[in-house]
Length: 226
Image 1 (cartoon, rainbow, N blue to C red):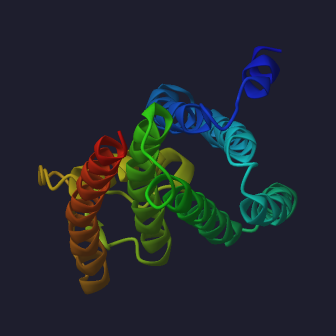
Image 2: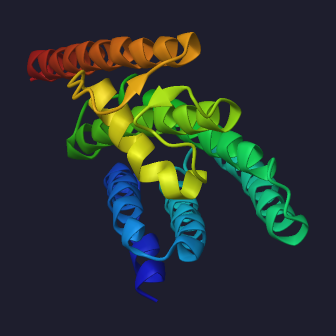
């Protein structure tokens, strides 16, 4: 009931705020579920992803192309989950990770158009720029999990365990890389893994430059209009 009430309050004036909170909830919950039993984690992560799907759908329903895309993606996602549990097909994990990556990428693409390249920057869009940063980190986190599914020895310090159990660890490594902190507890080993890591670092630096320039230009334009 509380979720229904919250969703009904989402408008074009606060939609990016709700989306950002949903992504933060995903990251925090992914860390907390590590305290649960292994056979529960998979269902918790999938449940959280469903909530994120719903919040993203409602938050970005003003973009018609995106809503059509998400409807189709949701159908394939549900079919993949059903096939994995009914037929115990291990390869479904790769498909589910691929769908998750496409979901984050599609959401990122929709937000870029709405936040960085349209109108003046307000509080809603400013917080939405945080959502863009979170989506970048999540996309790379999923890419690392996909790589681990294909090559268990791609990283040192990141075990090749079921992706639901590994999501928080992968997200941690992704954001450490995106912010160029580089603690060193997890490191790439294979050439493909190394390439993904340095590309994420480059994108992280480039994103900060784009956001700052966009905010500055928007502020200058607003001052000139007064």
